[in-house]
Length: 85
Image 1 (cartoon, rainbow, N blue to C red):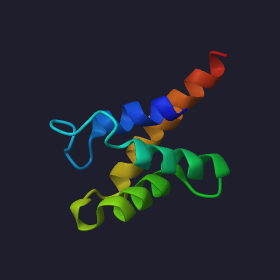
Image 2: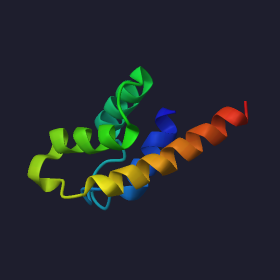
Image 3: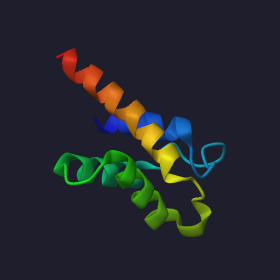
Image 4: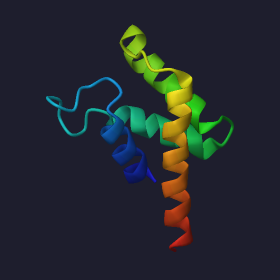
């Protein structure tokens, strides 16, 4: 699941860092998202929003509705991966 989360976050690149940052730039945030998602106590879109607000503060200017869209993409890919096993 970590790899799916990372692929989606890197593709999204919410802080626009991937043009010059190392490939592991968002690994910390991806791990936080995974850890909180596995606990299952929060909605994934809210987790994504909170993690990036906590990590990047005012630099993160994405609306929570976009985070919900990103969450839907992740959940779809995670569900598809689970069905393939």
